Figure 1 (cartoon, rainbow, N blue to C red):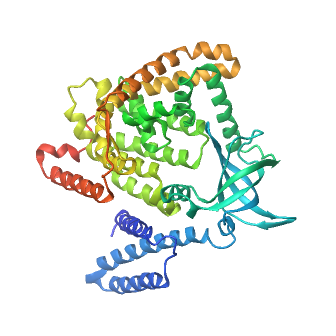
Figure 2 (figure 1 turned 30 degrees about the vertical axis):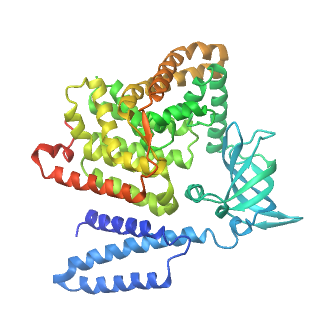
Figure 3 (figure 1 turned 180 degrees about the horizontal axis):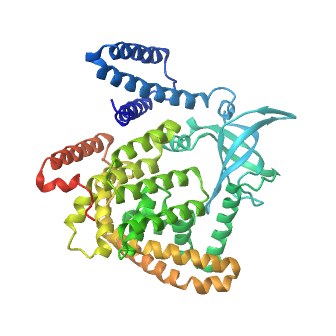
Length: 498
């Protein structure tokens, strides 16, 4: 058996085991499960010794290895929740914790901090603890950045007190408890690490944008350029949702891939290979500007994988499988409940399977729009059922709105970046340099609000259950398999024409 074939068996076995393990959560793998894995290893080893059954034995060893890796990953995740973690003290009582700030998000209503807990204070005693806590407070009295050592007093609650979907979302970020803070103090300023510098940079850039542009244009640019969407008005956010454009404000591989598509459309006059470097630079800039958080780094990985998918079809399916397996084993909770991760992989699979077909279908469309339109339609095939199930909303005009808005995103980001540099030097200079960006933002705002106001722009899908979603995906898979056997639809599985 070849090495890449063995790796595929290991990956598939690991992913299937992890998928089924979510219904066992939060229980660890049982002793019987480990005994079954050992038995499978032994039986497969015996088959390998016989020449006639050697292939079956090798496959069995690969499957056993994949199951063992998945069970070990789940066991490691469960171990992060044993007594000694901050979760064991979360009983809805007032506590004081001391820990390091790892993330901060603010909105008009409250400030949310992610704290890596070090100690739980009981009078003069400090009990060592570990685990991440989501802390919320109405407002901060002083500036805080990544790496600062904070003391926080408030009500410490378990995740079981939250809505199940939100609790799963926090678990996917490694958070095991929440706190409603009454008081937060900085005990010690953090050292000048790269993440701290990026965190401070993001705050300064947001302030520079807000001083250079009026609302809601400043809020849109912060969402596009910095991944900060807390100041976007609710009615505008609803228009983004109705037009199927929420993804351009979210930090996900889907977002980055769509921005790359629009960038490459603007560079249509260059050979395909020459477009790779600008795309990689764009992904790197976006990751740094958003603070290089875990979600941003994961999105950058997915965006880079999207670049590979766009420019080559050779072994791309294996790359997707191995990337997903590595991410799932590293953080099973993210594999189970991280919406951005799900959306990213579904979008890339759509590009891989249907991108070439839609490019041929739209071959009479001008080249400037063809790739963006083709890839938008391709990603919607694989993402629309998931979006309908998760958000209970389906946008009918998403292909049109994406076609009109996505080409505006790269020039907005570029002119906004140059405007930020000018604003950091001198605010009046920033306002002047921001003028092209303001014109583009005005055009984007007009398109989104106009299309979002259409009564038939979207409709709710409250009855779109998990079973219906699985049925739709089953039909998509069967249709794809049928297309791959038909000469007239062979483009579904062929490479993109150069």
